[in-house]
Image 1 (cartoon, helix red, strand yellow):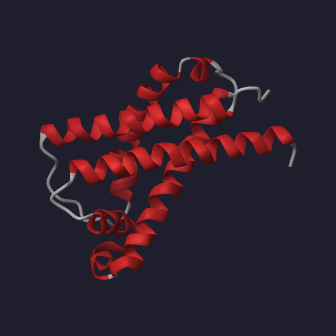
Image 2 (cartoon, rainbow, N blue to C red; image 1 turned 120 degrees about the vertical axis):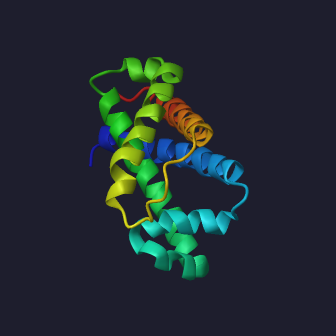
Length: 154
């Protein structure tokens, strides 16, 4: 692996960790009627179905791992897109907000429906707004971290 590829992978991992941390913390605040363990089990239910809620801390750990894996994969897409479009790194506020909204759409239109997570009633409008806000913050953290990590990488 060359130094350019190593730097790109490092940028994606760091950006994914930053975005994922902001996103999961936002979820803990938004869904304060649930415990963090329950929120992480809900994420794990994408792989485990309803059994995730009986899996205790093991399911919660799986949910946390899945959450950060997905965040790092989205960060990899962002960093890969920034190669041919470096404006994404020059304007991280704008690109991060837009990317966060796109991620919200992809998660809710593709990822969650394809998972084993229980499909409930559509969320009320205020929860959609909070979800968009959380993902906008995710995008901002991801884009600013990627921009900083990619500085000097050609």
